[in-house]
Length: 266
Image 1 (cartoon, one colour):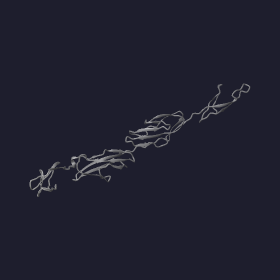
Image 2 (image 1 turned 30 degrees about the vertical axis):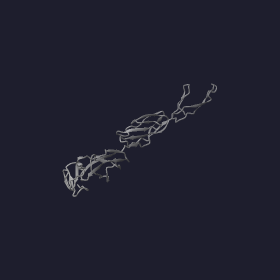
Image 3 (image 1 turned 90 degrees about the vertical axis):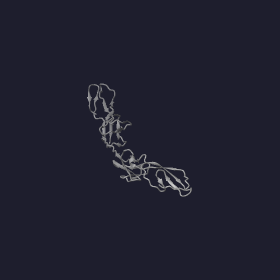
Image 4 (image 1 turned 120 degrees about the horizontal axis):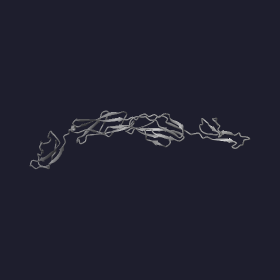
């Protein structure tokens, strides 16, 4: 330790209380302590005593605290930090696998799951080591069939189940403005074609949109109708011509003439 004194009558004597006299002076400190230093001139006059703290650096008495383990979605990034709480000296932080230095925060892109080591050095060459686990959470691949259901409206459809496993949340867009958060849901459709979509979300918030068509085709029912010519007649000319004017995708017909006779002719 070195002290510089001025004033008074030479020679000046530097006194390190409990340590020694003169400047510079060497001393081995066993622990943190306060150092008192004063100066006395040739006449025995003393200046004010100055007090300075001395810290004995022992990194092994402290703990390296890295940021918490984290889970990242594909294409995401992780924020990494490290600290040694309560350590009074200067520290150098290194991240060997990343080629980074400093305590952070460091923002790193994540391409795969990995354990990221971090080290802290002090001026005495002492070392603390730690690690942060980064997990890349890939959501499952979900596929919907090209045609989920087809039938006559109103068409009640139970969506396919067992499309994915694990603790997932589900969001169905049923194509007609309705949604559902059930893993497997049932819905009734009016006539029309509907494109159904599904998004699943992992506990870490990673999402996956279902692949495939997901079509629901609710067919409109036929409308039976006919015309007669004439609508009114008598027994002198009892023949009536009936014309089928039904609409829709008609596959079968059944005429009932009211007198017990029937016909399946279109």
